[in-house]
Image 1 (cartoon, rainbow, N blue to C red):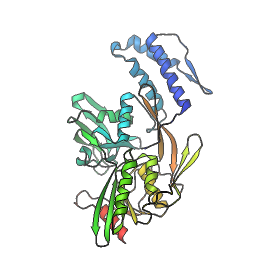
Image 2 (cartoon, one colour):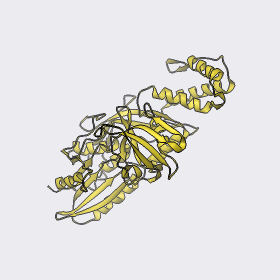
Image 3 (cartoon, helix red, strand yellow):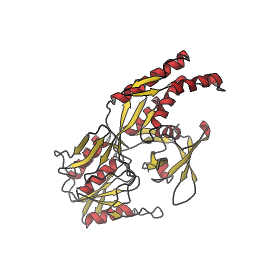
Image 4 (cartoon, rainbow, N blue to C red):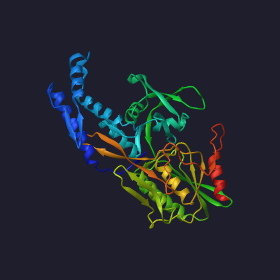
Length: 401
């Protein structure tokens, strides 16, 4: 996911706030006769049918005492947003919104899966390194067709499920288990994966040195563009700069699900001396170019190869695509995930939130890779049956050519 720092989408905020207030008045006062239309800009929103449905539920629903006004408000707003048909524009109730914030902060409890959609089906964007999902062999692109948690009484098909709800169902108490029914194209039939939940702390980046006759190769594994990266990236760069006999850098973006757009620009700025990293076309018609910070450039003279795979998504695709378009690096691996839109988080006073798609982004070449992904210059599959990392070996080979 690409996210922007918090801002305000004024008209949409007013719209949601107004709908919530009207619903609360209706629920708590039980009024059967009320205004059925709300003015939103130049459009009229007819709420009369919703009031009638609510009244029928109050009259006839079997377990009326179980009806929760607040949950019905959140459900109505969630449904309104879902009607847009964009799986990345979602309304999050307070608990779901808290989970989303933990994700970006880089520490949370769960099984270590970054979620997304493939053809509107819930999918593994990337298993996070050294987590229960990674150890169980889940792969980028695996479709999650069912979530089962016997202890919590959960047995849910994922058709139409929101990211927030999916995350909430998959996460849980550390040590407890959740079963995911997975469909993988190569196998042709669904299979169950049982995962034991753990405390997940996601490092943004890791540096490992590979000693070769030509010199030392810096293998930089960039896991996520989270808040942590702004500080951790600079520390890694300083280590590379201070090292003698560096033959080049392999920037490993495999299974990197993205994060903050600005963080990808920060990384690109150390490899490029100038130019555009990405162009953003917003919903209001505004076009904004994110350019290299020319005060950086600490690694512009180092040879560079970038590793990508089907789990490289969003901000990691921006970075890989920009470095390729500027002819700064060759890409090795397989085609990336293909997510080319930007989401902006909005927070409301009750702790709920809205992630709204506000823009599409274009690579320096003008390409938008939604649904297509970024293709590698050198295609190499990862063979799970061997103990060799074929993609990494090929990346080092290309780097040292």
